[in-house]
Amino acid sequence: MKPISEALAAMLPTFTPCGRERVQLQRAHGRVLAQDALARQDQPPFTNSAMDGYAVRAADLAGASPASPKTLPLAGESRAGEAAPPALEAGQTLRIFTGAPLPEGADAVVMQEDTSREGDAVSFHLAPAPDAHVRKRGEDLRAGAPILGPGTILGPGEIGLLASQGHAALTVYRRPRVAILSTGDELRDISDPPRPGSIVNSNAYALAAQVEEAGGEPWILPIVPDVLEEVVAQVRAGLSADVLVTIGGVSVGDYDLVRKAFDAVGVEPQFWKVAMKPGKPLSFGVFGERLVVGLPGNPVSAMVTFEVFVRPGIRRMLGDPAPYRASAEVALAAAHTHKTGRTELARARLVRDERGQLIAHLHARQGSGNLTSVSGANALVILPPDEASFAEGERLRALLLGDPRGSALSPF
Ligand code: AMP
Ligand code: MG
Figure 1 (cartoon, rainbow, N blue to C red):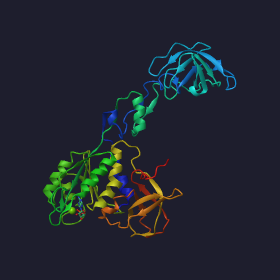
Figure 2 (cartoon, helix red, strand yellow):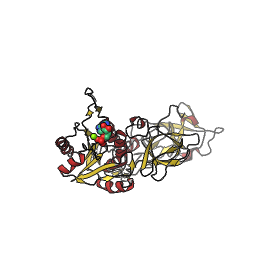
Figure 3 (tube, rainbow, N blue to C red):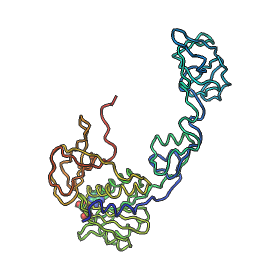
Figure 4 (spheres, protein in one colour):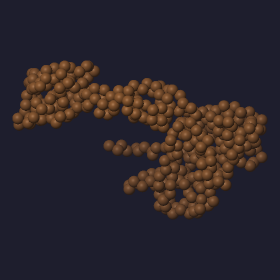
């Protein structure tokens, strides 16, 4: 049996970015940039006011204070969305609004609140420093400066920045198409009536959600019974995707036909027994550029092996330079024992205590068929293979599944 680290190290390098495509900026959220993006113009594009107030030459107001205000005549107005007004003469002021261009000659803005006005005479109650409340052309970015590079994940902030620089379309890595093939005589579709001994193909739904969450495009194939020719036919169909994930039929039972089907279609096998729990057998193979992963059928095993082996592969195909989940040190909420020999990935809910420490509440039923243990789990706590018992408060590492949960209490 290989440790998880070895199986991952052998498998992940075969997952490489699947190519690039051009997408409109509105469609780019969550995608990974595959190009350099440069600033197309200075940002701000022109020197402008950060406040509603009056544009002045700072030197004209030297010594102004509430006790001895200085008064200047009003020479006009500058509004957002209009070209800069004529240059400001010495000894004059100009009404100006937030975002409006600063005229030549002016070097400061005095907030409306620090002035008083009678007709066209404006009195200033302070002496502004040069550049006060002025946003200078190019202070954020200079035209031609690199702003974002390949490997950047495009979140709302990045999208706003790209929009401000006029990038209406971008080259991103293509999303891998991931085929999901469920095998088993007992499986029925969610909308089919129950028959004796049948269970719903729940894994296809769970894995499709995992593929989507990882950034791939799921494609659910029809369920196949445990009949070799039918498994072979759907494996062939699934090989038109970038990755084919099969579920079930990879252990040593009489009806475990998936590896036989891989052989029949010419998938080059790289099978491993991985020393992990849940999910011991993992069947991995390559077929030209296509990757084939056979996951165990037990619902929790399928989800956990997907999480550990397939998710980082999908992230790599998407061009993400940081494909692994973040992990954190957690403290066990209660003592726990497990069977030694395999690394166990225990489903848990993490809660932060008053001191900010993450406390892991392991689900009471850790069996590989207990789907209740994955619903509501926000972490997989790593129980090392050589330790049998873990004390309350013991510190362990955990994979963080998605963002920490939100709070019912407003932070404000
Ligand atoms: P297998 O790996 O095919 O031996 O399946 C192991 C267990 O997982 C059996 O109890 C199956 O009924 C169950 N199982 C297999 N495939 C699925 C599936 N797609 N959805 C839900 N349960 C499944
Ligand atoms: Mg089966």
